[in-house]
Image (tube, rainbow, N blue to C red; front, side, top):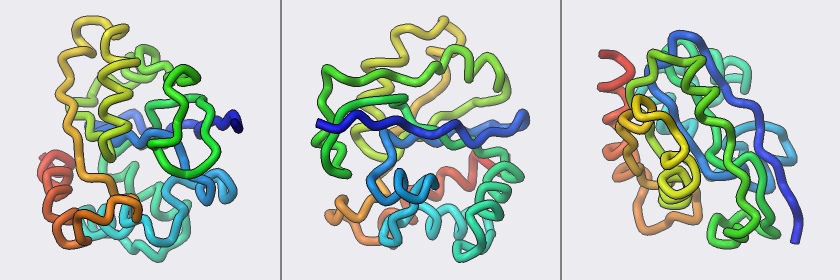
Length: 171
């Protein structure tokens, strides 16, 4: 098994939304960019909802998230996994990121959206129980995964489900 590590969060002091993945896939780790796989719908979806160019530079896309009050991170700081699939993450090797410190630095976060089942389940199991009562009360919503591995939903259905981000970001 290969031990892998996540990235630093994309953050801004004005963030009201936190979007969580589980752990970057191989392409993202190789490129050192969130959602770098060209068939992952994350950037296409967020660009449509927050009105920025999904084909812009990585730095421009990150800045667009920040300007929209969106922070981006992964639930897991480290784990063992040989493929890019969340289902291959070895549960006993999971080390979560420090959300207590992150949420203390970002007191305006009012909603957490988990990109897929693994991020949601990992957050609920490995993070939420250790948070203080105020941070435990932040609503957490499981969103359909933007990964190409989640082929049960087409792009339009995923986009429709993710529209809630636009409502929260602009409120």
